[in-house]
Structure formats: C-alpha cells, structure tokens
Length: 346
Image (tube, rainbow, N blue to C red; front, side, top):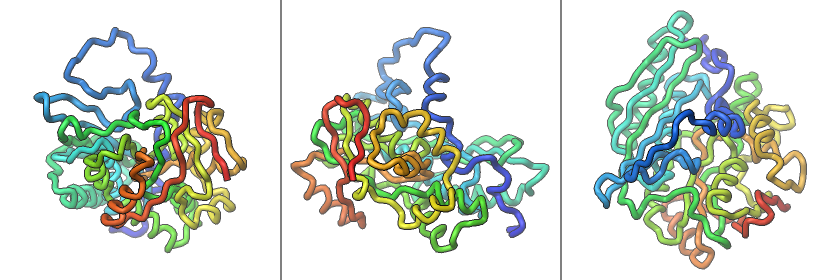
C-alpha cells in the first residue's frame, strides 16, 4: 500500500458517524407518497427501526436481509474493508440469524485514489466474509467523490429464533457485548491525535464478529437483541425501549466504556455525529452529569450487541456468555414506560 494515502482524509465523516441523524431519518421515512400495501410474508419491515428486514419463507424459515456501508473509519484500506464487512454482518447476527451470502457495495474516487487501494479494501471485506463462512458473491461499484464500502447481506433463521429489538419486558436486565467509545479515538485519528495502542484496541473491537447474537438468540432468557452503531448507545437503547413500550434506567459507572474515552473527550475529540445524535434524542435522556451525552451519543462503528435478559436467569446468561469469552455484567434495567425515555444514575 502507498503509506502516503490516508483514507480518512478523503471523507467528511468516518464509519457509522456518517449516518443520518435519527430525527432527520424519521422525516425521510415519515411521508411515503403511496399507501403501504400489505405483504403478509413480511415479518419485519422498516416500521420498527429494527436491524434487518425479515420475510417468512415457508412457515418455518425466515430470510433476513440488510445492507450497511460507510466512509473510511481508519486509514489502512484492508482494515477499513474488514471493519465495514464486520459491521454489516452484525445486523444479521443481531436478528439471531445465520448469514449465508454477501454482495459488496463500493464507491471509489478513481481520479484521486488508485484502484489498487480499492482492491485492498475489497480484500479486507472478503476475508471477513470467509471468516463468517460465507461467500462475497458479487456487488456493485460506482465512481464517487468519497470512498465508500459496505455489504448487503442475506441470512436465514428458524422463525421462532428471530430476535427483534422490541421484545424487552419490564424488569429485564440490560447487557452490552462491547465497550463504547470508538467514535472518540477514530476522530482523534482523523485529527492526528490518536495513541497507537488505543487505536489498536478500538480496531480489535470493531473487527470482532457479533456472531454471539446467533448463539444467544437460541437462549430463552434473551428477549430482545439489537446492535449499537451510528445512533450511539443512547439512540439504540431508546429504540429498544420504545419498541417494547418501556423506559430504561442505566447506571453510568457500570456501562462498559473504553478506558481511553476520557482522554480524547478532554481533547474535544468527538465526532460530529455525537452532536447530531444528541440533538435528535437528548431531550429524552435524563443525565446525572452533562458530559455523559458525549459518551451515550458517541456513534459506534461495528459496536456490540444490546441484550434484554430475564432477571431470574441472569446468572445463567452470564455463565453461558463466559463460555464464549464474554465477561458481561448488567448496567441497566427496563422499567414501565413512564417516564418515557432513559434515566441515567451514577
């Protein structure tokens, strides 16, 4: 690779921080110009802000479909491709499904970045697909002003194993499989302020497949799953609470957060997406300290999975997660809908 090419310098945003803010997305989706026809086999569409679409194939098997793509989150092209692929696969795992095939989405500024660099991005995505046991079977590419890469992924699952983001129950405990805060260090990299070790820790997290979702969906104590990406922990937890007709209370000191986050917040290294996220939903989160907004609204790229778990089986859940190399502890609980939103306590 040409080391003089820094991919993050060719994009205005980074990773899932490129996502359109929740409030703006609601405007885009809120005014269809035709009536919504009935599709009896569509089990999950876009009405619930879930992670993927789901179709009933034959009464027993569900087909799951998703797409996700973004601009560079890191400078190295191979790693960028691998992170983008890992992130796209996450939506399938979050539904409790097994991915079976992917196709690539590539936008590339051919006149400014050599096509060989795009080939390295594609190789990173292909390697992650191989790791997940699926082919990268095709795709589509365009000449675009900024580099873009991602996947459209198809998966399958028994219908009874599909886990939506709206299945949480009152009293369920809240768990997260990866720490949050990658938006701070990747913003620092774009500014040339990231410490190498911090960046490596964040990359390792973003490259870890969320295939634990496929495994955990078979456990009866897991009532709902979603992944935490561009809307931040606050946004995706609100989606889970709203969809389930509940509110949530979280203990900030128990939220899994990368150790380096405070260092980069002191340097004012937070993505623009953080502010857009908070503007969209901050009025529905009661903080114990104002600076918590920069953590809860931090856009996560290839973030972890949120689980809503039966409290009577919490020990059993944690034990099984330990067997799969996850040391998880609850950091919150779902409450009745009033007050509507999230309450943060110390």
